[in-house]
Amino acid sequence: MRLSRYFLPVLKENPSEAQIVSHRYMLRAGMIKQSAAGIYSWLPLGFKVLKKIETIVHEEQMRAGHIPMLMPTLQSADLWKESGRYDDYGQEMLRISDRHGRDMLYGPTNEELITDIFRSHVGSYKDLPLTLYHIQWKFRDEIRPRFGVMRGREFYMKDGYNFDLTKEDALHAYNRHLVSYLRSYERMGLQAIPMRADGGPIGGDYTHEFLVLADTGESEVFYDSAVTDLTFGDRAIDYDSVEQCQGVLEEFTSKYARTDETHDEALFNEVPEERRRVARGIEVGQIFYFGTKYSEALGANVQGPDGKQSPVHMGSHGIGVSRLLGAIIEASHDDKGIIWPEGVTPFHCGIVNLKQGDAEADAACESLYEALTAAGLEPLYDDRKERAGGKFATMDLIGLPWRITVGPRGLKNGVVELTSRRSGESEELSPEAAVQKIAEIYANHQTGRGF
Image 1 (cartoon, rainbow, N blue to C red):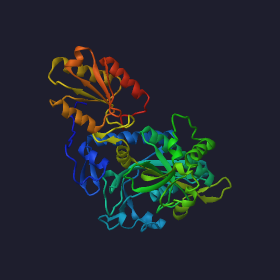
Image 2: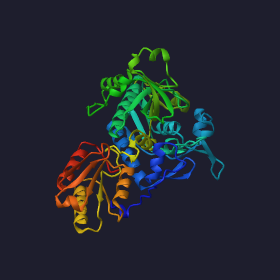
Image 3: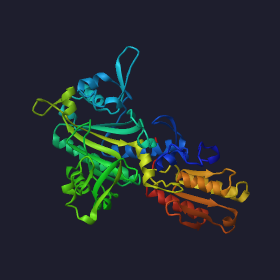
Image 4: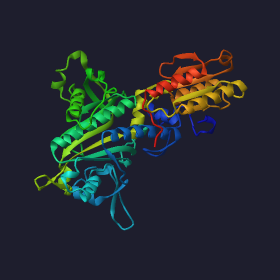
């Protein structure tokens, strides 16, 4: 993409309404624009990152054997009344009536709707196990929406629902989701710690939240610092293996890590003092096993091997896709702007032409642009007739991991400058070597171009 043809309305000054880093940089980098309190339009750069995150989530869910679908944003209130949960969300649920006076709601979650779909089409244990998921816009009418996409009223979320014959099968689905989430977060450049949590209005005896450590986190968290040494890496996992999935869960949850809602001071004090940590965390996902709570309420039964009808065991599993974008910025930035991990960057590399209009510099930039594109990468070429300082400031603000700087002086020596946004280190390379190095870097990252 050529910046002269792109829509990137960057701001030089910090917006007065932005209280945290992610909100400030998303506004300044032209990623979002508020349309109402807690509701945003996603501008091209923000939308591009959002789709990168969504792609990773889809890929890892399907890798785990989960089946994508799509449910509507508006739901009939009848199902929620049938489950007995219609009033549980209080004023956070946006309730409306259609022209015929039927009660409707803008879905904050989808347990009732997915259970109704299941009970309408599945009646035998032979069709189990089954996990369905979708990524859809949700709405919760926060009393004080703030912090940009971190606590908005409208948000983009993946929620999945497993249906199993027994509790043991459902707990395997729970463990499988934990594994898939750990892999997803690491691909996004995040370390998300699974912490024992409270079930809230969704309910459930088994539940873990995934939290990213950040000073602006809404939750106080208590943890053993040993959990931050754990990485999922590129280990191969057979998602059908109960033992492997259980092993990963035990590895990542055996150390103390809890939110303030479930914190146990006595257990925490058993952690060696030098490893006890108290910090703030941003919730980016949560998994639940809640047994037969919804299947019993809504009559989602299957015929078992013995011929008897029994309610299925269920769980729900959510990832805050739009919230993740803010969390990544909170975890990866400096005083100049965003620093995107390679897995979610909107463009793989920036090209800065120091002397736009110079025939040799223009030709070199065009050649780099074509070579990077031919390598399957998406460069952002700053071809504006702008001073060099302004171009560098824009690149630093939007946070592309790598930048190639092209100028007449370097070209006389046959080199361009390749700079890492994260480290700030630069090296002079031939244009061909710069392209090759960037291509090799991204070959080690599973990145997608979005849906």
